Length: 341
Image 1: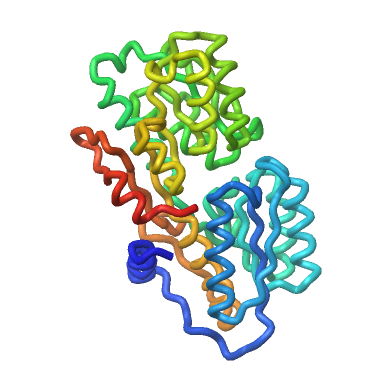
Image 2: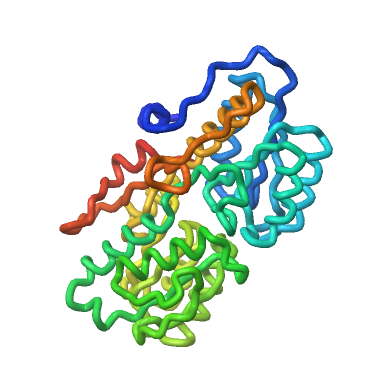
């Protein structure tokens, strides 16, 4: 973990979540369940959880879906964790609604369940959520895109490269946050695709990877080749979109914004592939989650949310080398010092 992230973690602890020192009791076990084991975001999440578990003497088992959206594997993982007698589960859910009945089984069995990055629906289906403020992350890149375009924003042609058809909460929050930041009426803020703003070319799904981003971008270009703004669910999807644009000579026409802040994504900002990204901190989410499970196993105490919020906020920073007035940001040099993956 880089020094800046460590400092941020200590600051987070100081503002509302206090965890005990390593417990004397043995046999504390925990599970980490991520959407995939290939996305750099979840790779770093696993690293953070593994390191903290080793430090605290917690036995950690890790599970992942085959692809983003594979909820069946996550359901099976929860069942295994219950059967194994785990004290708690950390989960980044693919299907934030569909997973709830299985999460309830875990909680009824006495396990502490913490959602990482992606809130469940409803959010209180988990005992706690450690996450980026994904709505704010979307707003930041939306505001940046609007200010960057200036007067041209009123005639923008915007495409959205979302995650999966099930519209998990993280997807909705980022998507709708971008619209709010850009000045688009979201209609139902809990739903993707019901907007009527004429600037929206359309939505497509990417499964959060480069191939999906490339195909989704190609689909949107078929709808309107004059598209000039793209919001992507994450940076792998953004890179795929750029590849599709470059293949037809339109890469300089389109302003791409994204969310995640992994090292490859920040480098893409440096290279001009992505205009701006919102950086989040998965290693912190996972390491604090393991601490919370250890605390729960020792004392029965559950973690509390950040004051004024329904979840524990692990922070977000806009990363760009082209700052705009009224939108706080850091440059890619600082972003690379804080990045992951």
